[in-house]
Structure formats: structure tokens, C-alpha cells
Image 1 (cartoon, rainbow, N blue to C red):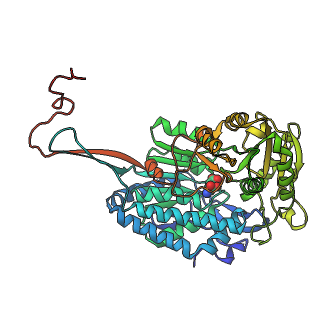
Image 2 (cartoon, helix red, strand yellow; image 1 turned 60 degrees about the vertical axis):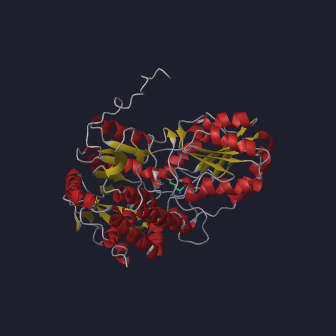
Length: 514
Ligand code: UN1
């Protein structure tokens, strides 16, 4: 049983959850706490958490630094075994973790299970890396000389995670960091501290040594900033807004700390006239309204050839009007709440902007009927006749709002798809293999789907995007190892004499033959 997931969290005066530093559950020196509430019903207090500050971060970073030499010296396969145990614990507790996630974050239970599963997948994948983590062994240009490269950990990783994938993303970041021998300080989003607290409990149970995993809860302004500015945090991984990511890169850049950023998206689905429209509608509805549109990978634009616009729109509208909005724990619900009231206000403000840009097809208001009035719900919304450069076609709304952009042909579709500052995910529906391959080549995104929506990345492939979606790093896959390691190249000369690279191997004819 997971300790903190007790029913007593429902009681208003339940003790606050604690932070995890140096292998102990501790209170913040501030003596302050903050609340996490259920976005489907704000009357439900999920729990109270420590409002940490810079002093707490300093304690956590020190404990991570202290644990680093021992963890770094632990053979990677042994580290991997602990990751494997953590994955098994996630699998064992999958249902209660998923329910806790739905209660705290709102996504429908089936998707919360998927979120936990993504954590399990990356734990197992990275556990395997403990026995693999390949470097290169290559021939030397000189005789009797050995040449190879190997990965080494960087040190203390500061992990700042979002609320939309409140278990998967913390696992995406911590698992590669830990298997490669780094120690971590995690700061979860203020909207989902319970989800990460539960993960950290299971990490402790799995056997990560004291100090290798540290958890500090609190605000971005206090805890997040302290992690980013700490001279002893060697690598920072952040998922969130592009504006915050740029600030982090600036601050960390001053001390040349490595930063991996996973930022915004304005993902588009291209539907060509020859597409299987039923399949396209399935993919669009799932990608645009799954997780209430709160995925970095969510489809927020449909770029459709004008000749099939009316048919596609009619099919889409019928499907979207039938979506049931409600609490994620209710099996009948298709679309759960937004994360909080500020998100409802933001989405509503974009709908107002959209009214002046495109034509509202359906939705457009907060959903407040009956019990929904106690939560942060918004109707699934479609606009059409949006132009590529309209604000609702350009800015990340992070909610259930889809803009349909009609275009004349495939060439115009490619231009429209790429006409954004972001470049995370994209998709094309077509039966024409030549056009599918052109899309795979010409769509400027880190992820491209053919005949599928924009969501559904698997953990063994690199995840991330181009342009202002990131700074060149990737999560997941073996690409994630690059974020948390330095390369070390090693030469062993067993000739017993001085051999000079680039000099002793000059062509005997002095190079004239070339
Ligand atoms: C995110 O939206 O931040 O591909 C992550 C997907 C999920 C991960 C999304 N596997 O939509």
C-alpha cells in the first residue's frame, strides 16, 4: 500500500505531505504549506504539501551531491536492477496510482492508466540501459593502440516537471538520469505534488540509496528558481512554457550548466482529399480532445484540403458534440476538466479571440451544468475558416479548442503546417504513399505520424521537437541518455613506444598520391 494515498487526505486538517531529502521525509523550514485540489470538484482537498524554499533546495542539492560518488561508483547494471524494481512497483500499484492521478490532475481514468504505463515502460527501458548504455569501440589509426568512448554521469540533475503527464514525465526524466549515475532533485508542478510524492515513495521502496532521489515541493518562483540558480545543479531538465524555458536557459547558460527543454507545441493534422475520413476523424478527436487538449502533443490545428472540408467538418462536429464532459473517474466521461480555473479563463479568452478570427462551430463556453459547476470544465470547441497566421492558429491554448484551416492543396498544407514557431508533433492522413513520404521529409517537427493523430509517442523513440519546442535535446529513447551524460574518449597505447596521432601515420608518399 502506498503510504500517503490514504483517505484521510480528504479531511481538511490532515497533516501535510512531506518532502524527501537525504532519504528522509521532512518538513520545509518555511513552515508553510499549499493545497492540491481536485480539478473536477474543488471541494475535494487532495492534500496539503510543504511550500519549500531556497534553503530546502540547498539541503536537497547537498544530499544529492553527497550521494553522487557512491551512486556513480555503483555498477550500472546494479543501478538498472533498482529501476527494474521501481517499474515493477509501479505496475503493482498501477490502479491506485492512476486513480490518485485522475483525482489530482483530472484526466480520465483510462488515460491516467496510460500515463502510469508510460512510467513503467521507461523504467523498464532504462533498467535495460544499465546493461547496455553503449559507447563506441573503434580502430585506432595507430598500431597497438585501443580507442573507445564511454558515457559518464554529470552530477546533480534538477528535474522540474509539469502537471499534464504528472507521472510519465517525471519518470522520463528521472529514469535516464539515475541509470546513468546522476543523483536527482525533483520539483513537481504545484498542481500535481501528490502524483510525484507517490512516485518518490515507490522509488524509496525500490531501493534507490538515500540522497540519490530528493523531492522538494513548492512554487516555481521559490523552488524552481532555486534549482535553476544553484551552482551545484549540473544539468536541468524542464518541461513547460517556452517563456519559462528561455529564462532557464539564460540563467543556466551563465554557468554553462546543461539544460534540456521540452516546451510548447501547435501541432497540426493535415487531411488530404484522398484520406480515409473516418480514420482521420478518429485521430483528430483523440488528439485534440484527449487529456482535454492538455498535451504538448495535442492536435490544435487541422489543415484540410478545401474539397473535403465540409464533409470532414460535418463528421467532426457530430463526434465532438457527442463527447461527454465530466469527472475523469466517471466511466462515462470522454473529456475531463482543465487543470484549474486559470486554465478555464485562458481557454475562454482564446475563444473570444477566435470569434473575431474564424467561425465557431461548436462549444465555446465553460461547462457548468449541475455538479460540473464545482470543477474546471470547458466544452470541446471547434473553429473553422481559421487562417494559418490567426492567433488561435498560432498560439498554444492548451485546452479543448481545435482550429480548422482550409487550404487549396498539399503544397499549401505543408506551408501552413510549418508556419509556426513550434515544431513538436504533426500528422498526415492520406492514402498516397508519395505524399506521405513528402510529409515525413518536409514537416518541420520532431515527431511525424502517418495515418494517426499527433499523440501517442512510445518511450523507446526520441521525444521532442524543433524550433521553439526545445533546445535540441530529446527525452525517452536512448537519446535521453545524451542529456544526462558526458562522453569520455579513452585511448590505450600498448605499443610501448611514443606514437603520435596525425603525424606518425602520414602517407609515406607525403600525400602526393591524393
Ligand atoms: C506531453 O504532452 O507532454 O505522445 C507528453 C503523447 C504522450 C506523451 C505526451 N505519450 O501524447
